[in-house]
Image 1 (cartoon, rainbow, N blue to C red):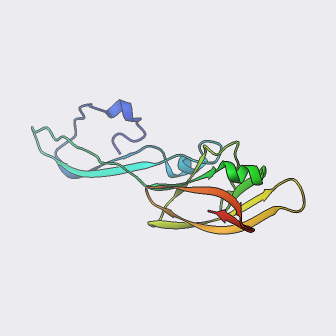
Image 2: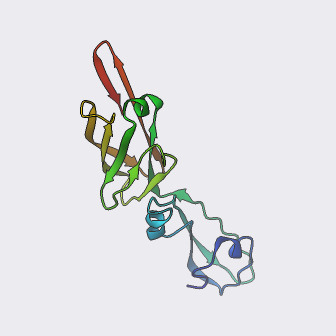
Image 3: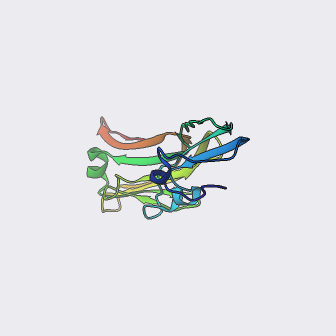
Length: 168
């Protein structure tokens, strides 16, 4: 590697002199795979990645453009007011390699997942309580993540005509 470990700003719009050859590869990433799941107290960060293969000819300038796309996926929870009012004590917990807990105090967080395929299943456990023994919630559900997208799970509650509805 000629420029391994350089930060974005140090190579942006810079001239780099390379010997004439074919098959050079330039790859760019916003963070490593391990950082993408470890940053932000274990919730992770979005990860963009791109690469370009190019040739260098003697005496010619070779501009190289690298198009980057999001290569991981995110999971976010939104606790609607109706849900919070019914279940003031509540949490959504991921059940995979990381046990991440979401509640109304940290619902701005997004959990990021590295993707080896276009989709990935994450099992979540939803729990809630009104503070008494009569109204408790304990539901396990799978959510399908998609590479390059942040999936938002909205939790609402309605209680009309004697039918209780939990909408996920």
